[in-house]
Amino acid sequence: MERKGLSRSSLRWLIGIGVLTPPLYAQDIMTFLTGATLLITLAANFVSPLLTGSISWVPSNQPAVFVPDSSGLKVSIVEFREFWADYLRQDYLREQVVQMSPGAVNTAWGRNADKNVLKRAVSFANGLEFNSTITNVTLPYFMIHSLQWIKEPYEALTPDQRNCTQTWETWRRANFTSTDGQYGLFVSSTLPPDAGIVQEDGRIYSFAWVTFSAGVSRCNDCRLSGPSTVQNDTPLSLQEDNLTNEALSLAPLVAAALVIANSSIPFPMNNVENYVEALLVRSYSGAWNALNDYIGSLSVPLTSSYYASQQVLGARIDQGRVFIWLGLQLSATLFGVLSILVQFHTKSMIQFIGDTALTAFYLDTTEVPVRREDPAFKEGSLKVRANGDRLKVEVGNFS
Image (cartoon, rainbow, N blue to C red; front, side):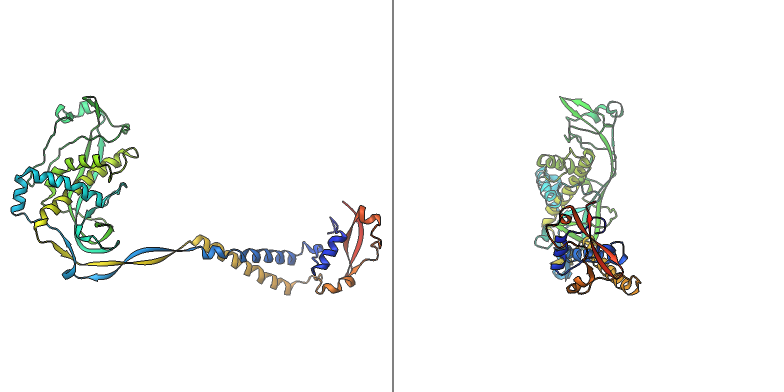
């Protein structure tokens, strides 16, 4: 006020609304604390939506009801009896299993790569809510350890190995370990830089050495992650299974069907290696799943206890918004406490005008012109200067 002056209309306005702010004391700590407290309190009154909007209710499924083995979930199992012998002799039964495999894959898998995840489609689980927990179930196990693209296929592979127009079958229906086997599939027009190519009959092929482990795993407390789909959430160990070799022999045919359907495998243009690995995993999983369901349809299924889940509402809290709201509330409280402490302990002699009705007694206006037409009001301004225990109003020039 001393630097810029105070016009008469401004003084009238301040007195008229009952508040006379003392800009003379702008550098006083009480002025700063009071202003900061008022501003923070004002802001704190308008941030309540931060707190109310920080809580959102999300529906979820939680295991709640235990169902014993006597009324448990049925899981198909293969009994190697007459029907299995018929399957080995009849090619049309093999074709039916291949046709069933994409259905199992489409039920359990989607477009995501889902690395290190084992899944199985269990038809008897239809109707159970998501996140129901199956006590004991067998999952097809297929884990890829390495995928190495062959950079120089004409040097590293024999003519027979590079032959993509003839079908080669090296899997046998017996217990054995095989280190070879191949099948070609169109996957992408963009390949990794270290992948060599082979041109044959107007088409381009790339080859890779794949190291993998195949079998089954016993999964305890497996979660129902989708409609009729059971999957693991923890690492599982590999175990032998009598269907492994037959599932591996069906995998190339299942892979071809999956590529044609193109509904439950990742897009190859995103990442070719993820595409190839996902295709191999889904091919074996689908073949094993279909074999188990088809051959086991004439067997007495096993039963497993489970925890049936129920739909519940869970609160999701945005901690950032809560901390912002809490910080403003604590700041208002802190500045208020500091203002009170400083007010009681300050030794400043300057006080606010408590009763604005006595403003005229505190202001010495003897030097203020009486007439409104006085040039001082047009060329100058009113300034307030401390004079002892009173405030003196003087006429000053604009500066």
